[in-house]
Amino acid sequence: MEREIWKYLSFILTLLLALAIIGNVLLYINNNELQKAIQERGNVTVVYNETVKEVESNATIALQAKIEELQKELEYIKGQLRANRTEKTNVTIAILPVVGPIDETAAFDVISKIREIRNDDNVGGVVLWIESPGGYVGPVITIYKELKKLSYEKPIVAYTGGMAASGGYLIACAADKIIADPLAEVGSIGVLYVHYDLEQNYAQNGIKVNVFKTGKYKDTGAEWRDLTEEEREMIKNEVNTYFEYFLQVVGEGRNLDLNITRQYGDGRVWFASEVKGTLVDDTGDLDSTISALEEILKVKSANVVFYSTQKVDFGIYESSSLYMPPNYALSYIRR
Image (cartoon, rainbow, N blue to C red; front, side, top):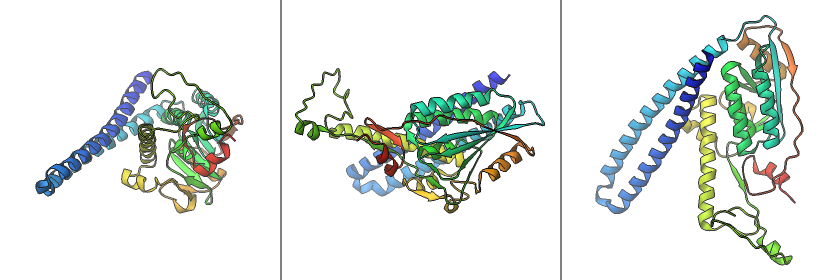
């Protein structure tokens, strides 16, 4: 029975993502068509513009309605999966820390702990303690997806006492609630691409690089040369795709309209007290976070267990897309 629920759940998640992508693509195509019409048919621009806007509006409303319908189904399935867990009087709360920058090693460590928690029937819920400025796009997204799976079976409340920025904030959006110290830094919704261009440095030091490649894009982002204009456009598209994904995650996790979410997507961080009710649910400390999770679990004085994670020697050694504020990325760039 549970396996069938998971199959249905995976289908709905895939459909949700597909609908979101289709919506963005349709808006992009319609905007391009509109621009062509403005250039080629100036005398009927106003009429065409109004027609396109009406079609876009209707399509957007219908798409949003379908997304909301699927989200309601997800909530129902989540409730069914959680209800299947055996009720216990001695419930354990697991505190799972995500500390420092996130790379592949950190993701491997955290995900192994997530899997361990999922398989432990004594653990009723999780406090996701985040103190992180984010990190590489791939590992951040991988952790987020694993946390979403965990949240279908066990409630998660995210907490930060100092920082949950960029990728750190993205993974917090997998939680049922986010609680933060009033002066904790949260947000930094955006994407950063770091590219090394050491071509002149190589030349000044008499270093010549011979490259044999099977395609003209194979060494895109390599440090021994600058990017071409075509490659710059490709990277811009990549960054924008990651950014749209980030916005979708925040909109879904925080139950915010995409237009409102986009207003927070300028890359800055806020004190948690400034965004209470939007980017965070409430302000408080670790004890109040545990109490909030106990309320969700409908228990008192739960047994609390801390999971340990290993320290990561983080460093940016090549051209990379990051969910990380630029001021933090600078500290980890290879010297």
